[in-house]
Image (cartoon, rainbow over all chains, first blue to last red; front, side, top):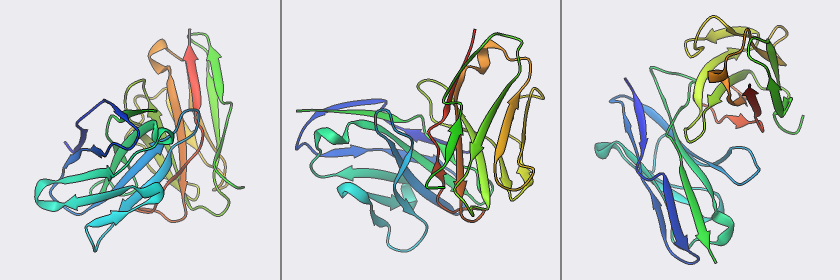
Length: 114
Length: 114
């Protein structure tokens, strides 16, 4: 069965630290990849997406992600986090076998301390 | 509308009662999706529609769950004879086109079954 794994459930870091959240998926075919964020009290919002082309994708608020096909990974990064980045982050995948159906990872709760 | 809306935002019901959860997608969006999210987990696909046609209902857990979108806009997710294990956040999303397109999420309905 296809799956999406996020390596960390909770991350705590200080402002200005760098952030990297891991995401791996298990599917050998074509995938479209997404990172969504949920700020406290808000709904899921798209951070960035990868469909094809340049594997390094830039999103909103200074986030970027790199698709490494050989590693089945789509890790999210931000060089310098702010307190306002405190949120839950979800990796999601659409495959050609599950067209239209997002498969989400379990999420990573990120807490940024001042 | 400006975004996806869901109602009610919170629903508390007694075991054995039926509940109906409503989703109003972004105007003009073809596809509508329902997800369920348990605490500490990512959203899990339930079903989706293109226009009024239900394309995939493979994620509905059992026959107590049903969904409709009779006019290709507003959708209702109905849970009959609710059980405590149905307690979760129910999320609706819509996308402009079917398939791999970005999905816009609503605020969710928090269902608690006592």
